Amino acid sequence: MKIVYHDSAGPDLTARLAALPGLSVEICPDDDPARLARLLPDCEVLWHVLAPCAAETIAAAPNLRLIQKIGVGVNTIDLDAAKSRGIPVCNLPGTNARAVAELALALMLAVLRKIPRFDASLRAGVWTDLALRDGPGELGGRVVGLVGYGAIPRLLAPVLAAMGCDVVYTARAPAADAAGRFATLDALLAQSDVVSLHVPLNPETAGLLDANAIARMKPDAILINTARGGLVDSAALAAALRTGHLSGAGLDVFPDEPVPAGEPLLALPNVVATPHIAWITTGTFDRSFCLAAENCRRLAAGEPLLHRVV
Image (cartoon, rainbow, N blue to C red; front, side, top):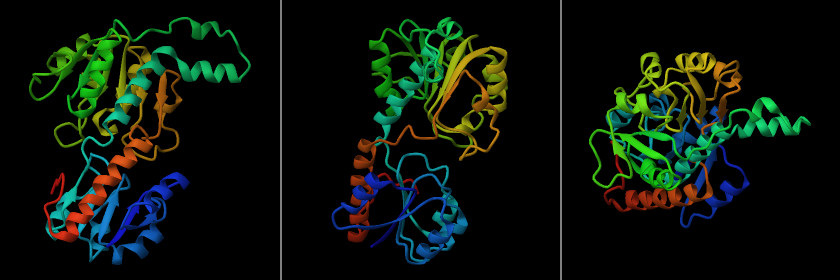
């Protein structure tokens, strides 16, 4: 079975892919379209990460039998094109939940404690930067609003509660075992000191936090986004951060990725940013590749696939 892993891979990840029993995985960096074009005609299974899997990509792979998302969100896959060819699309819910929950927490702390700015100041030779020492905050005692209550918030909410946070969440319906209080989105935005996004990007959620929603957020609140950049109006967010309506943001995702040169959010000192790496840990890879390999086995055996989306 000819498998293509469509993303960059360093030495550790390359070794993990090579060690998968019974599988031979070709690595194609997402910035090498020429290599992808050479691999697609013989590709039977595409292990898709983030580079868009467009209709043209699918059309260039006549032997394609499965598109396996390494992760959860399938918004970067042309599902209609896959469906029209009868190609199943599967994802891996839960495999990256712990990693994303941990980075969401890290971003909350980094923004509140101004960690990147203290680090940069110290490296520049300044030991006591009075401007930075005025205002670092604690997470405990704050209202933290979780937008969505799937696998990631279920891990994050008990940790926040243990740290002394008042956890509020919104979802399609209240969860019986939730570690927090249920609220509507508007109520959550109005009362939360920290708002953390944990919903997929789809037509219903695109632009969820537009200029009006951001204006309804509590003054001096912090926004954390480890989900998808398209959930937020980035221009409205930048404006709210400049005026001080919001005190900070921790962002792992952006509407356009890679982030284009001159992205206004990256010029703001009250933004902590990472390049869509919340999910990337050795634990995530091990869990993901185990399930992806199982789906390859099932495909070869004609058995039902795990976590089929289309």
